[in-house]
Image 1 (tube, rainbow, N blue to C red):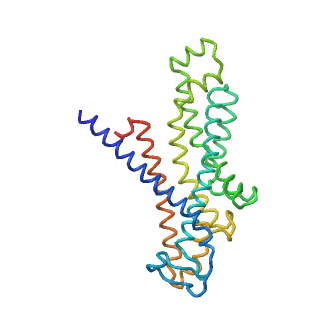
Image 2 (cartoon, rainbow, N blue to C red):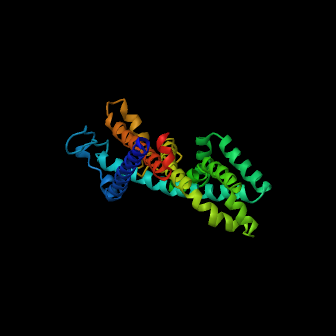
Length: 278
């Protein structure tokens, strides 16, 4: 009884944390879209102002409101994370199922690509793909999407290999059901929880890597108020004492990543009751 009650309380806590994370992240994304025009406004009469009540995150060397710029940058990062993680998770699902169901040759080819991608330094591969795709928003999304699917694909492949040995899959095969029909009707419903959790947990990695390559100059252009651009530009002004230009955007980026990770962990506890005891 105590164990059941504790598990129920843990799942309720997980639901609460998931709701808080979703509300905060959705609020940041919406606020960033609404503040986009205000984030681009320059006013030299208010340049280099330290944080105050009117400007909570201060202003930069062009008099731009850092609070608005940070929200807009985070909104853009969340958008890129959602798009790239969605494409990457879909690739992982298709390739993971294909590797485990379409025979040994297909499995060998897909496993080779998984090992090859995982064997290349992640940030280097991301920079190369993003640069080859033309940099900018399109290049970043393509780069992140093509470099984050491997771990989830390997996980899904392992799950499908276990499912293939289960009794109900063997019965379906003896009844004459093909591989595609078995995967669609019997495997995908079982894989959905792992897929959703893997998708959500991919967001923080996508956001951090987008910010990293933008910071290095291989991502979004300097005209866009992205977090990576803000942090990169602020480096040259830290020595002059303008600490707020990097501190608040950096803290908000970390908070966003932590909340995405918290949301993914909470979702896993909700979808997999056994995980609350881990």
